[in-house]
Image (cartoon, rainbow, N blue to C red; front, side):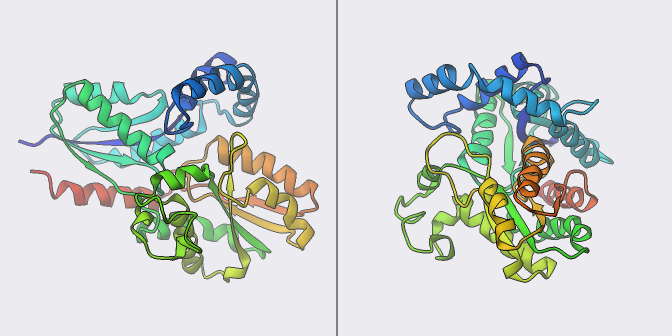
Length: 341
């Protein structure tokens, strides 16, 4: 008889705001070959020699600005998502993070010891990227093999234009758009341009063909940029907003190599000069508010925008524990259960 289980996955967070915990987290995160994809000797030099001596202190201060009494916002919200998804179910619903705790190793161990035979893996990333969706699936696969666990797995595919995801996002955002505004900014997490080229199976389309994201190609199945634009188009239509009142940018870049442009922080400085004084910001790449939305956008970004002459700035919260999002996930689980025998 089949014994099903569900595993929710997200990026992760330090265990606390102490510099030592942040350093430990950043070390694991940045040494991932799918995050900093340079050869191992170079990656080790950059991370251990250039980043870890100074970055943990800066990042710890940033985490301290958003930390709650319960802990990391991302972890707290992810646990709420897990609890809501597990309501009324008589099988395990586990949560694990790619980096830090709760760990993938511990989650796989618990599920294996519970005798689970069928596992539904839900990466909570709407869009495909080697530094998010891909790396978390690789890590889960590695851990299953390391524990010699004979389990049947199914995987939730990127849901960047899933009707239920778009509907949930629109439902979440709509109340924040009732007052008049000049621009709705879609700010997605950035990735290096080389990641797009590496994820392109043809190695001849992404950032090579003119207007590559709008030109139909198999590369779109693993093209983060194309998928971000697809989400933006679908959400703009669902919200009934004129396209000229929307803009797409990319945040959270690291290092000197070219990342996807335009950069969010640069646009926040430029918008007021163009008469855009009332700004709404939506971050569809994140399903739970975290450092990148709460500190980088709602705090740092707001300060930059107002300093540049902006007057009204609102970061629209992520889906978090919104009922429509939980319903979407629950529906995907129910559909998977129909295949389990």
